[in-house]
Image: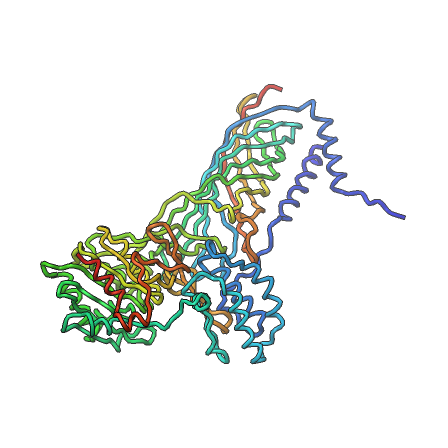
Length: 391
Length: 245
């Protein structure tokens, strides 16, 4: 009789146990794995790619679930064999991504719409009326402000995304050091074979390491500078400090959930061999086209330990999250179903003041807006403001 | 004409309760004790889309106060307020060897199980089966990751991410996110063990137990959410004190 008592509940509980209550695991595919034979696939690859790889979901106000509900049926009705539908899809991708705060973010497409481009940050600034042509000012400043001779150089060998690097260094009043350049590929130029930029940088570093007794300050012009290689943060700012400098924190995705994040890691600038801490004012000149590494450079100057770093000009573009390949940090840029490439940050950057400037831009200490008429009649007022900060 | 079909589960429950009630008076006894042990927890999820990234089980420990109310010679109701760790790690391989994150999670757990006994007078086997509820009290994350904004000054080509980015070691309290983290967990609890009655009052035992969580560690906060479940295997030992009948 005892055996009967024992066996019945045991069987029942074992049956319940193995019936389980867990949800089924659906496949989680990398967006690159989708073939893209239909717009359904393209949508799934893109939507899931963003869902799992975009790093700003904690602060971005875009309702990505709503995008799924609205656009899933719309894409299901598109025919991937029709050119008109393929073209139409661009406007849907633009609408889906319109509010994303990642200011690196852009979408590029494969044929037959390889000339299409989606950039939410650009579109937002265009609507706000703050887009103007991008200029670099170092050539103008060399002609009208720098002592003669200055050093100009170009590196057409070590290219960044196919573009040569151009730089100018010199002095103003013999005791203010000036450096202007179009993109960050400086370390590669400096360590590369003989090139014009290497000579510019050699002048800059020699002056920094052996400054004159009446050394008054440093101006680093990153206006119109679209950023580039992250190694340049150590190369450039690391020559202005003699101790490690923490300028903020970064974090990455730690899982597929939108809110899965690693802890914050300190963003550190490491001094370079032979560097001497610069105690005189260091001023970064910025404008609306100061982007990515150029912004991090301005922010690092602002964070110099002796309080001698300043920024002058306009609020920067607002693309502060560093980028690398998706596999490196398990997040960021991806290709969706051979149809589009989503260029997006791999990490979130929080400045040393605890604020995230992504999508907002880093505001200057001294706001001096660019105005073409003023520039043509009165000269470079942003540079003049920077000069006024020198003792 | 409507045909009423008897529910076999209900019939079984009534039958089971009736039998327990009939024999309760003869065997009722309260016991309490202490139990502790080692466990290994597996995070069950899907991250097949991630390159060179896998979840691995991690060890932890369990300590609890088992309380039994013996209803029959062969059956008791058991509960056990328990402190239990459910740890796991995420490890990367190949070029990324050395990148990992360990999650140490502390839970307060309360199982409610049927305790089925069989065997002799002193040496007995037993089987526990039931449900548990748990509350995720706290956690710690520990690991090493590449620091994208701490670039090595002297990059040397090599087959490691740390040739290019300095490693960042962390060991800090886990910060709960109220939008994401589901701190309540429920699941099945089952165990198999043996006990030895030392005298009328004391009995020692050892048990292998499986905890099979069926609630997601995350709240439902996004479409196409990949669930994350805990499955915990533990090996426990303890002692029970039998109060007077």
